[in-house]
Length: 254
Image (cartoon, rainbow, N blue to C red; front, top):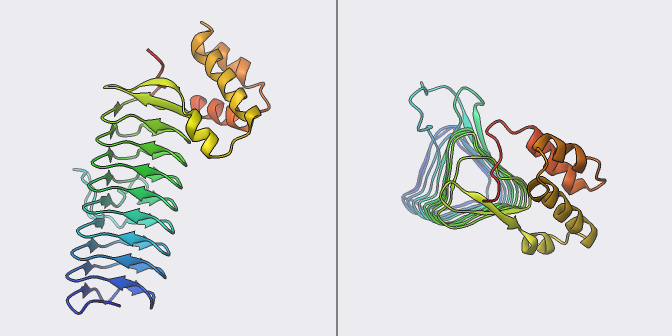
């Protein structure tokens, strides 16, 4: 059902069972897939919204990037199936550098959270109230970003991480860890998260060993990496590749 007060651009492609609330505006270059429900006073343009998403009142999806170099180039936001965007959530579309902002499946964005231009957000990610990812940020699958967290542009938050409330992330956070604090530092492993993801005891033990080698063995990082990359653990190999590909450097424990 589309409310009679909604404004729909003639270029928009909206599947038949999509619901759109009062006074919502659907602008140009939009595709909304089956089962998605949009509340009142939302604004959507230059976006492709997956199936069975929920967009609450006053969310703003696909608006131009907050980037002084942006000159109106064609770009878009892509949102995966089953993702929830609560009140006042904002997603900006990409700049000419990547031309897209991508948000995965089954994510949950709480009120007033923000995803900036050219971000890559994985599946099953939670961003709590007033958390914000600056431009070109990457967030891995199953990450939990707590309230009022700020993530610096180009920083990466690894798979299966959990970030403490109010943290300021300026360096890369390796997978499966906890981080917290102003200029966030590591605070151990996200053991609860790993267990909830049904990781095997062997995998969890391997990640524990890798963490100890990286941060408690007093080896140089290159030597610690050389040691842990011999592991047969898939999760440890993810950590190794994450560190090797880091451009900003990785956060460490205090």
